Image (cartoon, rainbow, N blue to C red; front, side, top):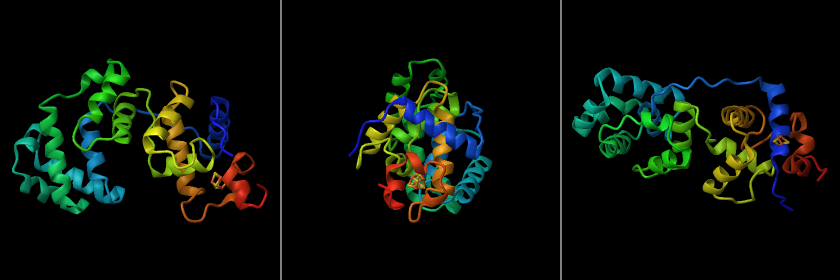
Amino acid sequence: MYKRPDRRRLLAIRDRLRREYGRPVLHAHHAPVDELVLTVLSQNTNDRNRDVAYHRLRERFPSWEDVRRAPVADVEEAIRPGGLAPTKAGRIVEILDALAGDDLSWMAEAPVEDARDYLVGLPGVGRKTAACVLLFSFGRHDVPVDTHVYRVGTRLGLFRPKASFEEAHDELLRLTPEGDAYEVHVLLIRHGRRTCNARSPRCAECPLRRMCPEGRRRLGRG
Ligand code: SF4
C-alpha cells in the first residue's frame, strides 16, 4: 500500500546513491533560451544527434533573433540531423516568437513560481522543460522529472502509483531540500540508466533494494 514519503526518505535514498555514483555539482550556464531550444531538439533522439543539430543551428545563425526571423525551411535544414526537423523547427520559431526578444535573465531573481508560470505558458513547454531551464540555467529550486526520474521514483514509492508527471514534479519538489535539486535529479537519472532500467532492473545488486517496495516485490521479499 502506498504511503506518502517524507523528506527523510528522500535524503536516505540520496545518500546511498551519492555513495554509489558520487556527488554531481551544478554549474549554472545562464543561457535559458539555449536550454529551451536544446530541449526541443532533444525530443525523440539521442544526445549526440541533438548536439549536432544544435551546433549546426548556432553556426548558421549568429543570434536567436536571426533564427526567429529566418524562413522556417532554413531552420529546418540546419537542424535536420536531430530528426523531426519540420516539427522542431516550427516549435523553436514559435517559442522565439512568444519570447519576443526576452532573454529571460530576470528569472535569476524573480520568484521561482512566477518564472515557472511564464515558462509553461510558452508554446509546447511543460513542467519538465521549465524545471530544466530554472535549474540548469539559473540554479533555481526546481527538479526536472524525466522518464528515468519518474520510473525510479515510482518504484521507490516517492510518487503515488500512476501519478501524473505534474503531480510527480510537485511531490519531488516538496521532498527535495533547497540546494539539493540538481543532485537529486542527476542521481536518480544515473540510477535509472545504470541499475534501475526500464525493462530489467538489476534489483539483486541495487544499493536501494532494502528500502524499495518494487525491489522487494521483484526479489520475492515483499
Ligand atoms: S531495487 Fe530494483 S526497482 Fe528498486 S530502485 Fe533498485 S533496481 Fe530499481
